Length: 57
Length: 251
Image (spheres, rainbow over the protein chains, first blue to last red):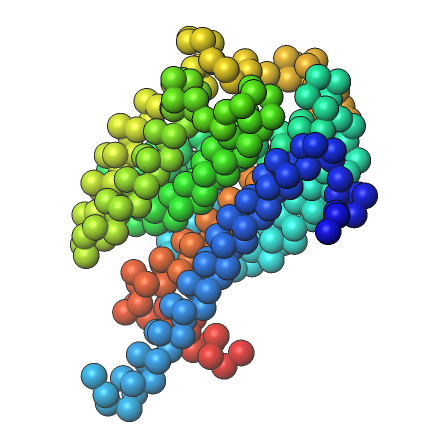
């Protein structure tokens, strides 16, 4: 399977694409972890507050 | 200005203020990254010496640059932690560490790939001062993260980690000047003011500026997001957090 022409950088294609793919994966992982972490905190605290109002420890 | 900074040190004010600016920063980051990648990958011309491999510059240089800047931010926040014991400074330092480690990893990985295309048949050179000092920076970030999460007492851990951040600061000038102090496979520094403008053609310089802006905005967005979640965790028993959670639940 060959790459489309606009993604073809000659013999250096694997090195260039690998650089951008590694960067994209690392940055995406960072942003996903950051957004999920805040959501999880809000959810955990909300659950704790609900349990407190019901009198559960 | 000082009054505003003083207010920003207050956790509830920081949480609300960051919530207001985050969407704008996120959109600006997405735009600059998209434009930078498109321009750098498809519109910028190949270099007369390095041909197409020069396109790696648009991810390698911003990542390497901010891997050092973020460490400086972390060390300054560490100093504030040790001197004034401001909780927000502790959290900003701790929230910066994983982003700095990620940028350093990107700089090392893309640098290795770029090195393979320009230095010959090698991905890594153990005797190269720039590569080794950047690798030391990566280990400093990992050490900081390990130290911060090693103890249940977060505030004590933050002070210990702040000392590590300040001691490790000595590595930053070593990374920057390594190409001048020692013989290195890595090219000399061109990223300073007029020298930078004179050595890189505008068709390559502008996409690089845009990518630098994108990486800076990405750091700002993830830093604010990480700090917000750490703030919620550390202040979970305070009234303002309960108010924020109630508002979030009813929305």
